Image (cartoon, rainbow, N blue to C red; front, side, top):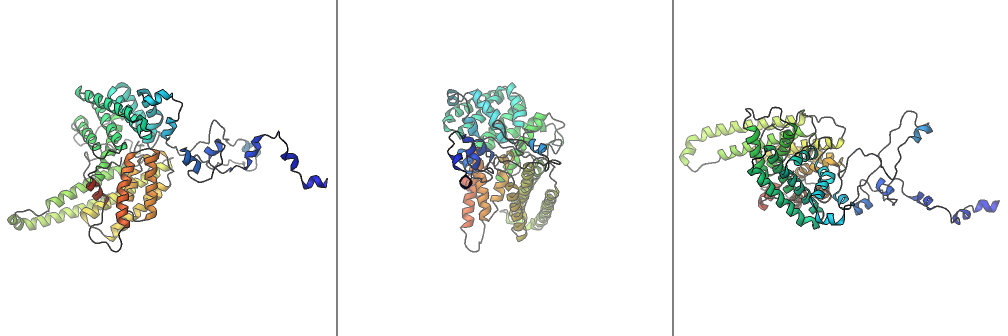
Length: 509
């Protein structure tokens, strides 16, 4: 009896019939759900473990369980706890955009994958790509608007296929030639559609798809032309007959297309340092708190960004009008009137700037079940304030300690809000703009590193090449700022200087 108590394990260890399912009891039970379903040992690194990074998998983590009444003392309630099986996983509260490689590694026939025919490109758009473009699934206009229109209009269908195949070619270079063929077909169909004078909403949708496709491909020269064409269509088809520059109860599809255009137009006004092509609130969703595919809950901050860009245009015109002319007699005769007029205009600009600042600070983000959408909206509010303070610094008041402090505070706010958004979440798709605005003003190396990692993730996970272009501008800017030793005299390099020197038209949309 004593001997058996001293050595109770040999009988267990020599049992050759013991099933191997008992061995994994030593696995890390606190690892991610992805590794647990694959029966692999997880290193436990949040938010993305090492195995999922290496294999380019979506790293799922189990969230906290709710405890019902009496569940702490009732074995019945414990039995009702949801269990993870091989066919389902714990529902995620934050939707994650699917990686393109999930489609590439699907069970599609090898011949079809190599040929990238139209059906395969359209299936990629429906299954993967559209989800990478929207901040939410409730109002995903890339499916609910563009796809039904494309069923009836061949030009738009060709454009969606070209867009989808072009993005797929960024993920796998073997699709590049076929993607070029699809883009050529789309251009021919679009030209034929314009010659036949098709419905204006179809032409507008094609222009917007071409603009987005050029931005995703990293174009820094031609994407704005498609936006200019879209602006002409909007003015001619809808705004020309409107007395106050707004539309009265347009159909849902047209409202979505106008919001789509406004998003690209307003962000373009920031990077090109100019007014929007079509200023105003013609595109504001009804109801106002309706989720937008691009900016989610941030429609009001986006409208105020447009207002700031218009203010910037007014300030530029004032500077040009107050510049000295060559006629010395006209200068002496009108200098007093010019000074009074210039002073009055400056006071008016300052008043408008502080009014916009108050509107942004007073804005309340609509309530939402998605915390990520709230985080994105707050990041856009801070980006709008940075844009405002930059205009005040460059055009109206000049640099001051107060303005620099306000800018630094908004940079901190953007980083805080975006840190709450997990990598790969749906609202991440339009976080490029706030990341860039914060990166252009930060002097903190830790903040630079955070922005660098986020932009690299957007460029590698979503394959949005305009994120890589934006990062290259910031890297040059950061190199200049971090290499400065001692006090800086004169003009401090700005990201606008880098863009102009490169002759770029940077797309942040």
